[in-house]
Image (cartoon, rainbow over all chains, first blue to last red; front, side):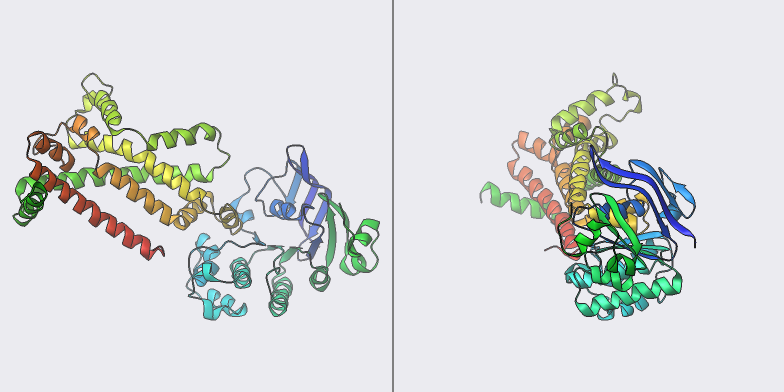
Length: 240
Length: 233
């Protein structure tokens, strides 16, 4: 299987405080990797590194076989997109927000893609509504649509279903699974919902204090964790 | 009829008769003001957006207070500075812009520019910093991020336009020094008001003031309609 990402001795620090310290990590093309862990573990920072929104202080990130350093080529940046925990929508209509990524790429925005994604996410009736008037859950679905309409090779999800009701959580998980199966989209999911990780991830990692404590196939991770810190975290203990 | 009443009557009469010298003065006022405003916007909006977005810009700690200071520049000091630059002994004396509308445009651009830069910068800084990050994640180039952010900050940017326009259309010190208030050449409404006041023609001066306020009101009304269309009431 091809490797989407390889991280070698990657550290990301603010002054003396390192929030990410990953000696080695490989993410396979087409896998769904879930990352769980306590708040402040460095999960979101790791996603920002994977989205090339920040550069590591030390170490190297290899993407699709190329070491990515300094000015990241636009083509690589456009291969990856994130659905953020708190999506910021533009002061435009819902439909305009959904097609913004295609517009930024100079792609056709008049085709049926916008309507298709609006429909898939149950947003058709809100297409002309001002995006800033949406509820948090609706905004989250718009953020999903605007990320998926650009057909990224890698989809990074940062607590993407925190604002959603169970029906829409299921809807989005189905979409993520379908994109992964149909288009081979690589997915990295940061979540506090261990059940969600179990439902959709091929592999799961526990992050704490910036480091990856354990990374294993999801079933083994939850049923037979090797690291005692993983076992403690899964049992609800506080982990530092 | 008191001075105020006569002023309104005179203003109405000047407008009704389309007094040729008034038309010329109003036309030059609008020409100088709008030219300076357009130049200040072309330079100031991208500059303000750049400074607003580049939160780690080296020297920002000095640049931002300098911009804020520029926003309070006394027009007469700008006029004096421009006069010295454009005078025969000045570095740009050879251009022959002193006592011409072009010189007045230069002075007014210098007055308007810090206002446009400062207020655009503030408007852009008022946008949630996660918006540019999320646009980058969606594949925007740096220039596209600036464009999207400016569009999001459009209400604040319109306020920058209004503030700059108000500052220069009502400005008298700089245009008086640099333009010289030459009838038919560099006389604008504000300098004409000063002249008529000095001559003791208070009613005419006040009439010109009413016309100036009327123009300012109509323009600001148009700006406000623009803001309403942008969703602000």
